[in-house]
Length: 545
Image 1: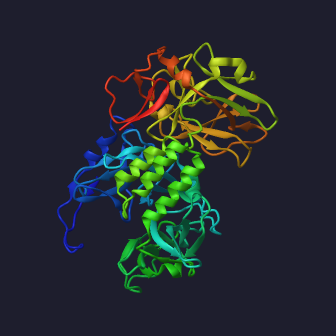
Image 2: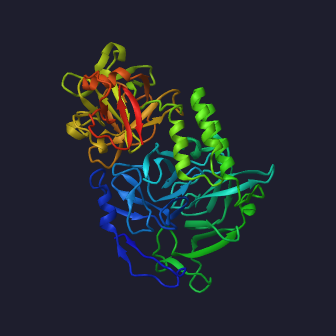
Image 3: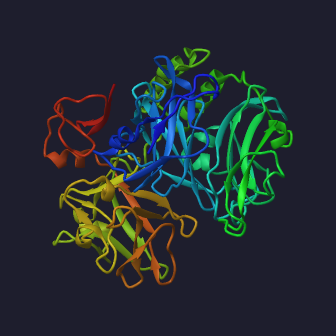
């Protein structure tokens, strides 16, 4: 059961719970349905930026089954809820207990529990007030750069973005904090922190997830869940669970307890601990909270750097400069939406979306296998080059609302899905599907550069629709099964070289039409009455506002 309980007197009294379970579950019935879900513990997040009507937007991150996390939001303080990214959105399929936060431009961060770090994703609005936009790809961060890698049994923790001043040079910026246990078990709760000051700090999920600046250890004993927020006195209110020392020995409420010797995780319970930290204490004097950080100037500098990196045309730069100069002192959501609309004309193109891709598996012994669809409509492999195999080895890549990609072979009119050995795959292990199904047709493209430069591994769902799987080939060319991450040895490999080519004519060929006034959705289906969103017209993407 998911229930809404409100207090209007700072927690002194509470209204009767309102059951919103069916309302929330039904948000996903026509997309990626959920069978079970709960809203992660700690605080839910209320936007500091997005206000529609009388209330600032409230976000709640859910641990759901199957397919990992979902994020919902409410613009009427919990009376009605909406799915962020739509009913198909799967922002972190490998995530456990998640939390949400907000970047200075209004984008939404998802931070989710996983062993050895956190899974991050970012939602970018195209129309903030209407809740329209899309998720990027989920990325696991191990807090590299902080000096400490978390252990494998992390619980949930809190993400918090603060306006700050870097004390060494008085530079105004933002700082993201993330709490979680760092020991091998539920031990050593601490707080990681990272500067958000340059383009390379927050323009992509990969950049957000990496290169953290430091760490402060709160507890050096058994400790688990934690939450934090900025108090009115500019201190960080930090609440966490720490090992139970015995009833009555601490004047704290007990959050979990077990009979002596019968406890979980090798201890008998937890005290709830509260500490108020200054930011200077957590960061060893490096940063101070600065509530009046100039958000307008921060965003102007950020978007100018974004445009420079994108190598935009002179016309787009002129439009962007005008929009940035006109920004309000407290930039409104409509102004930010307009800036992102301008940037869409010159933003670095998604390297895969809208392109025709070929996939070549690379083995350690140098053997290469090309994926293609054979005459029996089966996903197969060949030692021939992709160029020699022609259209059978070419897959139109489309970025879906989930933030993942579908691969569609236009010659065979089939989508690529996960295939393995021993008939493990969906649809009789054919590796193909005639009709689009987000559960099986949506893929993530993940870097394999840590093992082999310029390679990627492809991850989708196995036949149960719940478990992740990557396409992996044995050295002799047989399909096998692999769950997640890089698989690369002298016996097998799931690493692929991906080659992309422009798809302007290919999009037109799907419908065999040269009429430039026809509009299609991203699946290649003709749309008679297009509403707000991204479509294809004349072989090119257009945005209808």
